[in-house]
Length: 472
Image (cartoon, rainbow, N blue to C red; front, top):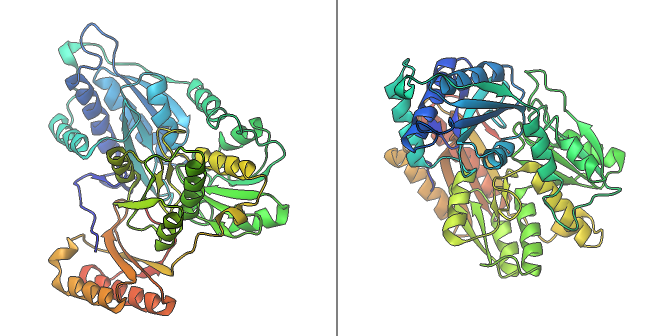
């Protein structure tokens, strides 16, 4: 059994919630901006006599994004920092841009794959990586300390806020060079579902500049249509379009474009586990997977572990969340990691998980394989029967403190006879408990999944459990 820990404001992927409802309010965003400026001062960034600290902010297409962007920017500028507004850009763009422009920090206003009425605040440090748990705890302390007060060292003037198209231009220029040598996509027909999200203004340009013919879906964000029956959580439209348009493959991003779910030419879905196996094989063949390790998560299908084992590659499992995958990669020296949801980390190509970069890497693997189809390249990755049940909960209590739930989980593991897994954990971004069961017997797996979902529902809430393909 695996249970994710809780934090007061920051979850698995930043601060997240219903827009304009605590904590996802302009007050919180303003306090965050002030706290980040204060943290920059503590670290000596932009100290007296030096340039002011710089914060770069990007967002997805949610209606509440303008409001929250403005509040974060006002908080940071009111405390003496400069702000660069990058506009509609994927989360990984900010990871790149903070390093490219020497920024102190970056913030992304996005709730990723969540519905349009949610929003979130993700923070990146100067290195282009998300803040550590310790840094997030310090930010929360500073948010509480600053409250409504403007903190400007020595009475200095407030910072400046400027919007620039240069940020998007630099990000696109980086992407078209990220896969060296075999990165050209001349003649490739690819369906691109932007989920009406952050990739809507840049994805097609990247693929077109590399010679591909992008067939673009859902690239017209109106504030309310992000992730709505489209994108990585709903790839069916993309897959059907691949077949209808006779494309070589298709890709569906999520709202902030750090995830990518694919469809092969026959319309079959190719998820993050398939992609990890494909890229691991290519890296290993090129002598670039040293050590021979891939980092997945507790939700990675056992079939991935089997496929990697055949290639003499070991799968390590981190807690769910790209930050935890990245931490384990750093600890072990692994050069590839990711999640079934399509969040893939290839440090040699990108500082952060980037759906567009993942797509370029998959296309490069297809070309390197002599034009073999995506379906052929992943057909040796078996998928052990797995179900994921989402249970909406009224409260989050450590499941180890609920004896009746722990007992039922232990019984489920016994029934799987050592040839399956049970993972019960709270979502770090939504009021959900996720129940994952996998094993050799599909009927037994489904039965146990339904039973455990009912047990968790009875213990923690009275909302509906439903199966989903998504995970953080």
